[in-house]
Structure formats: structure tokens, C-alpha cells
Image 1 (cartoon, rainbow, N blue to C red):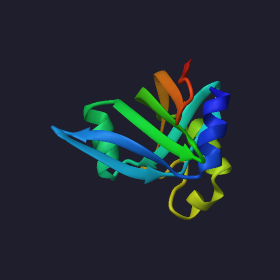
Image 2: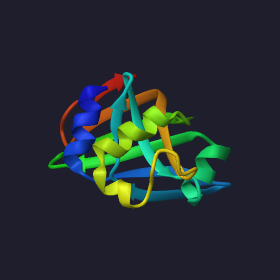
Image 3: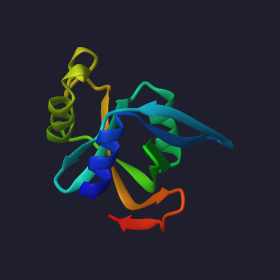
Image 4: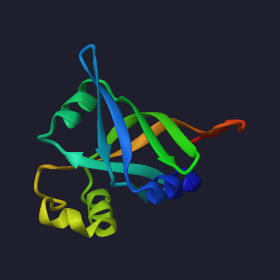
Length: 130
């Protein structure tokens, strides 16, 4: 999992795909943290992406750097604990102007049953499960 985290951090931006009924939705994200040996992402509860993950927690993340990319298929599980939210905010201080751990809007989710597949042009895929 640390290898996956390091890669998406290196990329800076990754893309999170959800579904809105039968319509796929993809948007850029930049937040990730490791907390209690789980990979977390962050959003706001008022956003459509939060509502979409609430209805269908299956997500996919894609990030690309150089000639390598990773696709992560997982279930997004909300962790409503203040400690998890604070870890994300501490790792991404720029979020503190928009969120606080106890504002009722900050949402952190960890990736459960995740399968990360690293690929490159001409290379053999590498699969990491966490």
C-alpha cells in the first residue's frame, strides 16, 4: 500500500471515478493519507461525489506519471472519527481554509478491498492488494 500511496503522491493529481445512477463521473483529486495502515482520501459531505460514494461505494482511482500509471479499484468506506479527519488535514494544510475535523462537512474515506494495478507501455502489470 505504501508504494501505491507514494506513487499517487508523486503524481500530485489523481482521478476518482464514481457512478451517478448509470452515469460514470470522474474528477481530479489531490488528497491522500495513510492512517492506521489504511489509504484515505478526502472530500466534503455536501459534494455530489460524497453522495455518489454513499449510494455506491465502489470507486476507481487512476494516476499517471512518466510512462507508468496505476488503477486502483476499491470500496470507499467513511471513517467519521475526528482523528482520521485531523490526520488528513495535518497532511494537507491547504484544506484547513475549507474544512475542520469537526465541521460536519469534512469527510474522509479509506479504501477497502483495494486492488492496485501498475502498468506501463510494454511492461508487465504489477498488482498490489490491500
